[in-house]
Length: 181
Image (cartoon, rainbow, N blue to C red; front, top):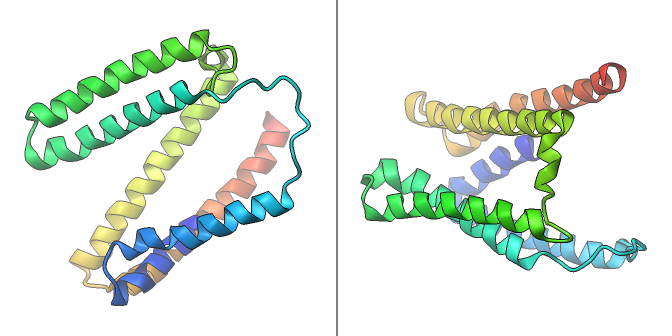
């Protein structure tokens, strides 16, 4: 639903508000989700789950944040000291994350699972799907607004079929996975 509703609600907000409003819409949704989870989700009965992997979480945030900074700032303002440093921090952060997760008793991400072909294949499929989907949304939005001259809400409406295609593709994938494995 997010693929369909996100561009539509964002387009509606951008008709009368600044672009930052598209981020603020997540605040009431997150609050509703937190309070709903606290009220409706029963406590876990799982045994021996261990402690939360705070170091792994921090390493993943630093790694991904540095990578995103380098990817945005490098092409935009040149590959000076800032973006290059961020790219190096992302590389070192990835190595540190993998090393930490390999020795943590309850890792945030069990990197050993990447040795299993079905796991790695499914992760690659999801990654390529999201890269492709977000690329389509990004370029379609740019094309519809800056080349064809549609407004933000009109662009959101024209992206609705993409949400339908993702919904149908997900349903089809679920059926094919059961029969083909």
